[in-house]
Image (cartoon, rainbow, N blue to C red; front, side, top):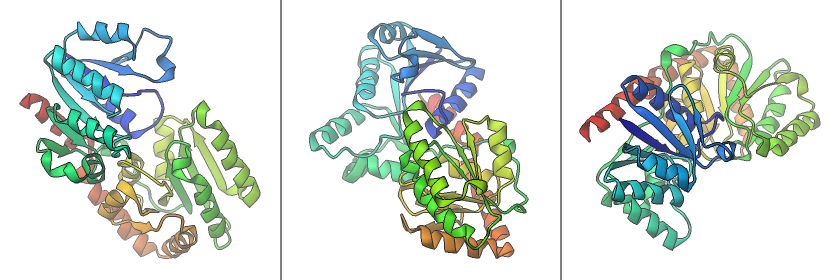
Length: 350
């Protein structure tokens, strides 16, 4: 039995990529064959690449028709851009298979009114729409939200038992996420330079995925570090393995985020699984998740206030422990087991 995932999949770190891998592993063990069709440039010259839990095909006509004749049972559309939506409809109409749409990184309502109407019209043909957060659902459907009945929120998640819990002893901050301007690392470093004036030995651990396309921005980050004279206080873990990532999270005391936009923010959940208090910019789905974790939210761009709040927090061990316990407690609804059970239920219902 075949399941088809449609997304710009790559080996990069990222929330949607992680969900795809988790679902692929889970459903493969249940006897499904997982195929992924992607427009990512890494697969442009390859007809097919076989992985442990799935096979990856590049988005072209030949591969589309090959997959069509493999009789896909359910289509998971992880990114509601028009080419993927049209391809999903192709399988729905001509192959008469059930389609499941998952709204991810590009779920925002387009500014173009015609394009917006086209997308919302296509959504009506889907058997189920799933959203990674309340924010994602509202931005995807806008003022038409009440017209879509067969919808559900399923939070992305991580396996709680694969993370080590921080003892909160080291004076180290940590952030996690791909190296991109959306994460606003320049603002974070400026904030951190203010914090160093009060805590000279504090460290900032930056765990990030870096692609060639973002190498110029990474250079900006390194130049900013030199300009602020904080090189000895910043540690980079670029494109690191999972075990190293988890060890760095577990040795840190506080998770910080200056991201300007998140449809969900799986990195925040990973920090919660490590028992870390969270402080972040107050925007998009980040607000939703941080509030549930009992964390601290700061207005976008107000890095001076963030530095002040972090310093106050690090001087208050009781509050740190209290927030850490809240993170672990709230994490329960973001555990992978819950996510997989919900997907199992949906597929059984089809």
